[in-house]
Amino acid sequence: MTFEEFLQKLEKAEPWTREKVEALLGVRLPERGLDDRGAHSVYGQFIFAKGLIIREIVLEVSGITGKTNILRLYLDNKSGCFTGEQTKKSYPGGYPEMGSPGAGTTYIKKMPWGKWDIRFGPEKEYRCVTDIGIRTNTFIKERDRKNPR
Image 1 (cartoon, rainbow, N blue to C red):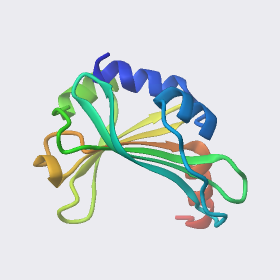
Image 2 (image 1 turned 90 degrees about the vertical axis):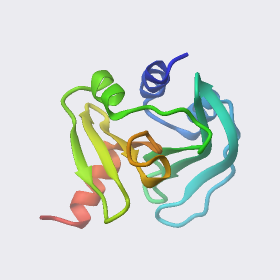
Image 3 (image 1 turned 180 degrees about the horizontal axis):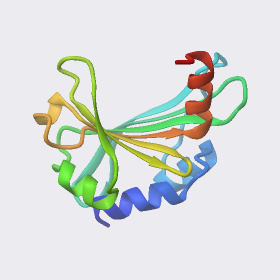
Image 4 (image 1 turned 180 degrees about the vertical axis):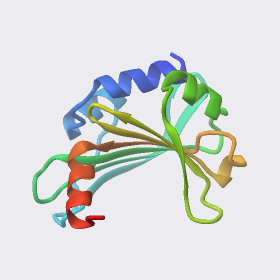
């Protein structure tokens, strides 16, 4: 499986419930805390596609609604280099978003279910993907409600 095929497979698992994420990724996510933004996290070395090695999987679920807010996969330093050009080719029409100084750039692509949030950080000299995020509409709406512009 390629990096792009993995992203497509991940996208098709929407909505990202704990059970669906566990089945899709073949991992067991531990119970989370009962606070507002509790997360199920698991650490290891998980190989999901050619050159794609994940070191941490985080599934954040709202303690209030029980709906998924964020799914984030952090790539291992031994993972291959997946470039911004590959990401733009798979998901054209996105835009870069600068993080805090030294944090890198994030490629944001709006989708019907929320946003892809694919980061290029210092761990890979800002040219390769360092983590893959899914921000759901549930999370985006709640964040916007709490922080109106």
